[in-house]
Image (tube, rainbow, N blue to C red; front, side):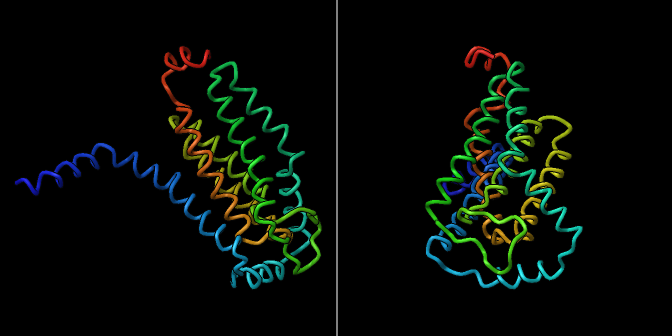
Length: 228
């Protein structure tokens, strides 16, 4: 009976907190571990054997229409394209709940700053398999476009999570991120691991911020603590 007591306590703990632990695992730990694994290989200059054949296969199916689509996504995801979106998303919730505005600002602004630091840390050269229609002068890992798109989609999904719009936000956000990732690989300015690593990092970053800032704390507590 004594030996069964810890098992019973563990079962009770998992029954009470299993849902929260699953969210923590899939929202923070799993994407963070995925990023770390990719980053370790990039830092050690280890080649990913699948990347060149995959990129050449994607490029082999290029067309004028796909060129326009990829360029449109890349321009939309650039700093100039995303700056108005980011400012709007920070300003819109400010008068409703300042915590949300701080959360969005840290989510989007944070990944913008971290991306510059990581690029210079890993100094991975850009792919050179063909001449891209939109060449990029800086380093390759991780993809800034993928990081910002993933941070944007994750932040919106986090804000809408308690509402009925959570699943549309999650599905549309995922499709948007995948399209942005595809566009950067299709153009030829990023390796698949650049966009995958960037997207995974942003999921972990934004999820962690959502937990730290308690974005869905009860309004009464929010007003007392942050003046909203």
